[in-house]
Length: 98
Length: 163
Image 1: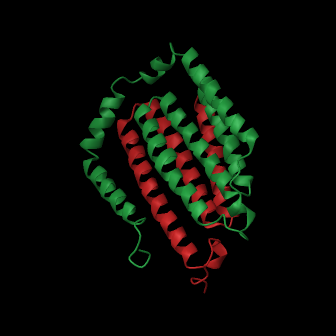
Image 2 (image 1 turned 90 degrees about the vertical axis):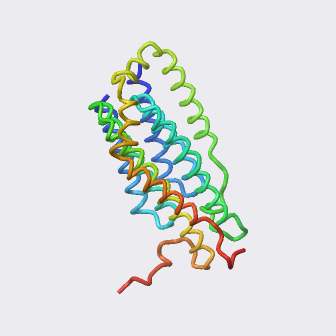
Image 3 (image 1 turned 120 degrees about the vertical axis):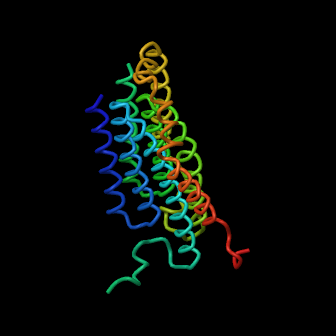
């Protein structure tokens, strides 16, 4: 069980990281971040249940809520960027370039 | 049997994560993420955290993914848009794969009904301790997260100019 869960966690996290790094659309990057959060939660829940650690389960619940709030804010920012006619490609935002 | 169900849910999640990574349509990527989140909810349930599995399905696979799909549809779909925004079709083989996986997982879980609750009840007091931790030592954090979610919901409220 341990091996299966850790393999799933690693593969999901790698896929999320690759999606965040390799794709250029802001929405795809946000989806990659959500995938990484889900992967980390799988590992946390697995270890919490192995060790019967209720506090870790509470932490996972808080992570879920914070990630949902982050997704909502991210999506509204992306929609705002789209409405300002700058597209939703990450390459369109260059203000912070030196 | 629980091990096989977890392995199947994990394998399906990894396959859909791979499709999500390589498919050019954002809509297909979002639906694949929905399947991945449902599968992680199944893993939570099978590992003995049914409440977290339920919350994962309700909050993530429900509310957040609806927002994602609506955002994709709102930011594309018009004539002249790039195919990755305008393509709202979903590959049939992926839909069949997801459906078959759901049926197989259900069958595995029902077949191992004698062993699955044993796995869930491996720590009988865990759920009670979870609730207690949430409203005692994590009470302040829980209230703060509640406030954060309320503030986040304001982010999708339309501004005065848009109204």
